[in-house]
Length: 319
Image (cartoon, rainbow, N blue to C red):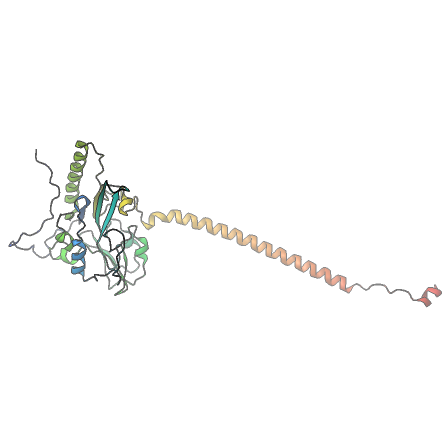
């Protein structure tokens, strides 16, 4: 019985073959499947992303080391659209342990919070079901930054607009694989139609968990964001071997609208409480005013009362 391959490379033209025709990709949901178990932390994806998109190589002008393992990119933001995470899991004496590595990127959510809150229409959904910010329409309001549950979006200091991964929309329109997937040497980042990627990812999960069973180890491999329960599905989903929080991913990301009922209820309760406090405060002020007026009136009455004169000696003799 043939074994499932460790990783299936994304479709790429071989040397000497013809390049895909312009616009040759079918307009179907397309994205990334990232197999973190074969990521080697080489950062080729980060470099390729910056080169293709003309992003600066420095971290906001900071050339200092972060001190966090080999992660000097630190985070996703307006200048870093790919971020390779290094998670070290070692015992205190470092005799046992493992490395977890993951190339993180925008999730291109099927139900995207950033798109939902954008007031200018700068964020659009493409024919490939990916999410792109149009910098020439963005007004830099930052609503999308607050709405993204993954902390992907930030302001690019060069043009002061929100920016993030476009899934190389310009390359896809011309039949080219995104720069990061093309540069990945281990096929940790795989590109293609989401339906095909999900099937490929499920085979890989089954393979890893079978290997774990055969060696008496716990089955830890699973897919993050590959089903519709998470924001309708992520068009950039992951194969993980630990809890989402270990990779810096939220366990149950929510859309801004999902929090509106609770927020609205809290706002209503707050408004009622403030109204009640206002009524009590107004009533107390009126009572204090009435009391002050009563005290003033009493003082005025006392001042206007004429006291009887004390009789003198002559009046006493006459009496």
